[in-house]
Image (cartoon, rainbow, N blue to C red; front, top):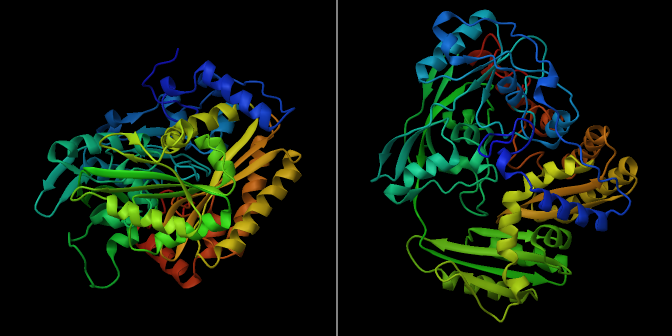
Amino acid sequence: MTVPDRRSWWGWGTEGRQLTAAEADALAGRVAALLPGHDLTDHAPPDPAAFAVPAPRVTPPAALATLCSADPVDRLGHARGKAFRDVVRNLTGVRGPVPDLVVRPRTEQDVVDVLDWCTSTATPVVPYGGGSSVVGGVEPRFEGPAVSLDLEHLDQVVEIDPTSRTARIQAGTYGPALEAQLRPHGLTLRHFPQSFEFSTLGGWLATRAGGHFATLATHIDDLTASLRVVTPAGTSESRRLPGSGAGPSPDRMFLGSEGALGVITEAWMRLQQRPTWQRTATVAFTSYDAAVAATRAIAQSGLHPANCRLLDPAEALINAGTAVDGGLLVLAFESADHPVDAWLGRALELVADHSGTVLATRDRATDAGDHGATTEAGDASQAWRSAFIRMPYQRDALARRAMVVETFETACTWAAFPDLHAAVTAAATDAIARVCGGQGVVTCRFTHVYPDGPAPYYGVYAGGRWGSTLAQWDEIKAAVSDAIIAHGGTITHHHAVGRDHRPWYDAQRPEPFAQALRAAKTALDPAGVLNPGVLV
């Protein structure tokens, strides 16, 4: 029975927001037009009871027993993240490693007690935020027992400092609950990753998550004032300061540590006033090179748009419903202090210098388009926003129909982008031809832009074979990851390393730093129980 608000055990989000039958049929129709001949037979997810989850191999001490769940479906839901390969394994009945217990601490002292118990018994602990990892970060991919540590009960904005415009927030707070607690104060964290509904502050911090906004404070790092972290060696709490030159930053050590060095229990976060003014524009280009040049000009202008998302023609057509020859640029400016018309106006002068055509502008206050835009053009940015939220649900529906649908992302300098883009696109296209018979499309969008470079985010849509789509994606992923590293990109801009990116992360990081990271792991987690296999 479908329960609308219940989290899906096998795929993204909640059961009630999965694609309706009509939406799924319409999606299948579009795929049939794109990939004629592909078998679009739907494969429903199996009953989780069919996985025969084994009995727990560990018994918690009596003092912790009430915090522990051995429910099979609960354990299955904590066994993996939400990547394509996770969804496919669930759909095809591949069980894999499952945590023996799901432990939900209610206080920080509970976290200390759980780590003490697990350290004394050499039981690995996998910290779990919302479980939205797409890189194998929450999967107990190792032999032996494991505990999934779910911080969902640590879900409060504990304290607000309105003078300094910061707040002390518990790590298990999900995005919507966090914003709901800040809203009465007229404040916002202004961090909205695609997983916003289904991820937590602690997860954002542990993975150095990127938000929706394209410039300035693009990552959670930029919003972090101080961290409190429980480790097997003791509790670390940094001093709340606007800035400091006192040696290497303790916060920087734990940001992005993915639970391998400690469990983040709370953080002081920098807030902003909620924006009052917002102006958006949609710009079309006839040349992709011109679209990239215009985007770079805006990124280097000092205008700092909230959104500066460039979609290539395939991405614009598939996810914004707009046909363009060279690219579609979605721009937005916002402020809590002043109107932003002048900033948008200057940005549109810059795109005009690169032969960009404004399809529509929109003011949030009036929600009215102008420039004589057609309905299609005027709705392009709104269509993109809607598609952005629905993308993971669409991916799951396509995965059920033997499609290989997944993304990979990176960042590079503007100078390196042309060669990297050509190499990555070629690697993906060649791999699709090799493993999927040539039926597929590779798309690209910029999710974030910096003065020195963009963050390209690629999508793969390819016809797979039911029962083989996991292996097909793994081969495509390996090919593009090799190309990214070979051409100066990062293996991840905001998805984290997890277990899936480890081989390429090892190649990217300097070896002296790797030695220092291993030493930190040994000092903070001498028994090696924290998320084994991640980072080191």
